[in-house]
Length: 407
Ligand code: ATP
Ligand code: MG
Image (tube, rainbow, N blue to C red; front, side, top):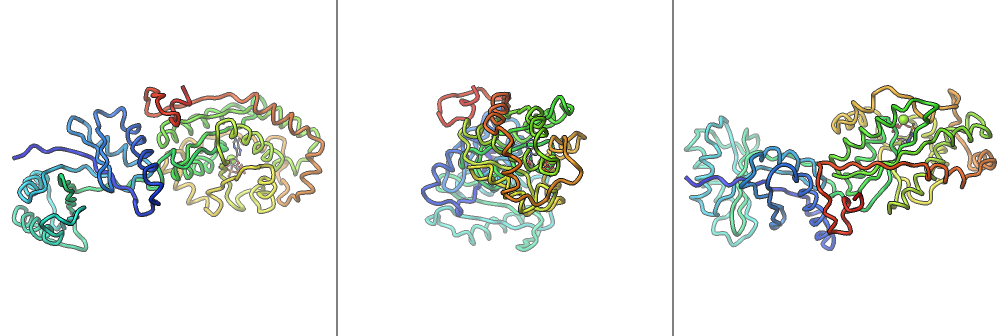
């Protein structure tokens, strides 16, 4: 019997890619696959038609490699496969080994030829290999509800045989869509909002505002823990921490209570935008969801937008709290977010903030503030932390390389 040669086979949604974007997409995807697996043993990447192959001949933890790949954005699915020569004999040999000790009542063969000059059609392959499996195992063929689906992908040079395909997150590889800055509170929503942009191929840089010494410093620890968790999806992260308490104290001196939440939020947006320009980001992201709280009415969202020159993305705007919570649980941010802490926007604010501020009203209350000075106060006091996951050495050979930026 031939020795089994393990590999991971990675599929992406190629159909959704425009022709000109494909090389860029693949370059980012390949680099992210390398980063995600850099600490789990030897892996060699190869681009095949419509898929990426990771050769795992010398890798001792293929399952770990597969689990890491299943979390790389841009991956539609990943499977641990065996590689064989594209002859029926070789395919049967590997099937026999693959099915050894497996119990299943029904199965189907899903054969695909990536090139049409192969002497057998996929129907013929299904039939030949199906008959072989029936003979070996006694299981029956069931095309609709098979207990075990056996995939056979025939490529010109070799064939891949595998049984379990794990779904990836889909989306686009991180780095393919540019950089955005996410306003990250310690709450449930903003980490989920940030992740939505990571999934669409953005590098996300985080900004957290805290009100120490007026409030405890728990929110900063939560923000760091959240960023570390989200870094598992983008491999390297930056977090700005902005002391906001003094700015709030100045706001309180001239802005009436009900208007403060919207003024705070506009100030956060202005400061985040300056930091965004510093890191080359082209948009901001918040976790707002329509109608959830007083600052999230149509009117107040409009006032917050007016403080920004760049687009403000709100990927959760039409999402219910239950859906957001479920997503936070899947991401593993929920546990961190529900740690009790005090929200900086409630500092010096009444129970019932204004829900419908007009543009004139907000301008009137802000007239007494020296906005440029307050923005500079925030940006100049911002401290900067960076995280890398999994721990990889900076390469620095690619100007586009995120680690190089952090080095
Ligand atoms: P979250 O669950 O994300 O805290 P929320 O439902 O509590 O959101 P708000 O308090 O109105 O809603 O905050 C709306 C958005 O404003 C947050 O999702 C976040 O993007 C941003 N934000 C609020 N507070 C902070 C903060 N302290 N630091 C950074 N961003 C913040
Ligand atoms: Mg909050």
